[in-house]
Length: 348
Image (spheres, rainbow, N blue to C red):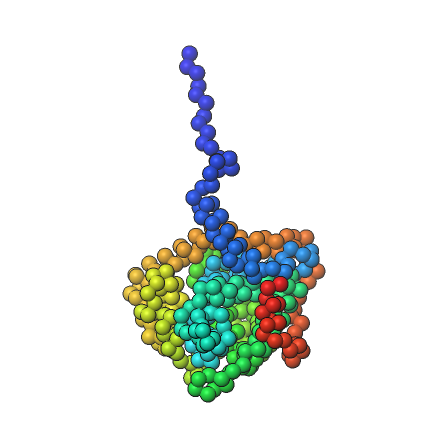
């Protein structure tokens, strides 16, 4: 008599003694993010409480959707920083006040990037744009107060004698337009299920709340308005020597060159002309973009949703009383703080 064989059962991933390869990579990436960014720059930020608080945007907002893809958000911020520095005043603000560049013994800046400073800037940026997007209302307010306080300290004179002031309404408008354009464009090109058309314009219209919280006025509220705003600044833009040394053929590090190419590739047409960028043939361009798309979305897949976003969803799981709150800032109402006091605020 033939005895039927028992069906073969493959071991389930739940009880395998080792993580699968993508889980190992995800654990490593999350560990690095925890060590270098979250532990240092997310302290004091609240995402899980108070229950029912929608924050500045709320769970049904386009902003929650766009900012929840952390790798695409990071790429968008890099793209925004690139076009932002085409304003010579902003470039010199960074040279005089930012940790981003290495400094000589006398404190003067070089054109070389300081890795620790770059990590600090990325950490502050991510904390701000994740915290204001889906943090609690109080977290968003505190972050905005801190960034405004930093802006109030950034005043000076360029080497050509032109004065700069980070509270200048024209600067705030340019800065805001570069950020909202950078994040939205990175999302549109590299998110697996991007918002488009009217839905993407909904993001532009919502995100203006962040610009207002920093003192911005007359801000663009659609993709078309943002592009028009950016191009309107062309007469005052330039490719500074410092910017030129950190882009294109002047980059020797291959990993940096890949990111740099992807950033230059999504710039508006007039910006590409300003930086002398010509895209490769359509087949090569598609292949390059596909490779960047794979890297960005593989990182998101292996790392999973940010714990802060998961906590924010729990905060509103039982619903909210209102769709969203609004920034409470009134122009001119901030106290005067020294740079040392502002720096201390970032570490709490």
